[in-house]
Image (cartoon, rainbow, N blue to C red; front, top):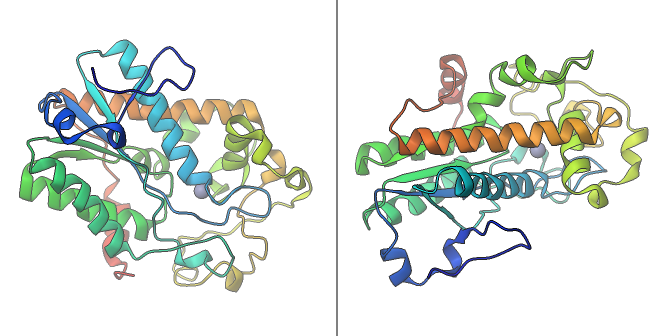
Length: 286
Ligand SMILES: [Zn+2]
């Protein structure tokens, strides 16, 4: 029997770090989906922890695995060790942001994927909550490489949801545009109020709404402080609502569950819209 962790819940999950090479070798090669959470330590305003993206990617991946354990027992899901890395150079003028280049992100994802592929595994899902295009560039280039060189089935399902209007179409009606809640604003503060209320500093209630279109050409290449974002957030954290957080969290879990099934059943996988991909191509390796 493979060792598992219980987390005091009925469904336990298989963590890669707990397995011996022999146990890994015995996993069903054609039926195992590996989940790789990867997001950087990054400032998230004066009110949220630097691990906001990392914690969310890790927790939603775990909950998706638990859900699949109940509904799709034919799929063996394995949680790879969550990787605290990503590109976030634009806000390293705050303490707490640790950025690696998109090239490093690419190398890390390729290293995980190729190590698995060399031993006969073929399915990996990348779970990231950090949506910066330079970070995604590393991930998408790595997926391209893993598909081409090893014929691996890989996907990163959250950015196609985030970088389209999928969320706005489904979310509860709020009366304001949540698309502008780019960083540590309403969406992420709501998420943290739901997941880790004790990690949210109550000062969020006093924070004024600040908006910037970070993907406009004028903004690219500038740091947050150069853009006048002196507190390190973009959006309206004061509006945060734990119920929205719960909904948003579940949308991510559902997205991962569906993508894992699609991966397993060889269905079409979520992908970024063409215009986002072209923007990504224009970015230099940083
Ligand atoms: Zn974030």
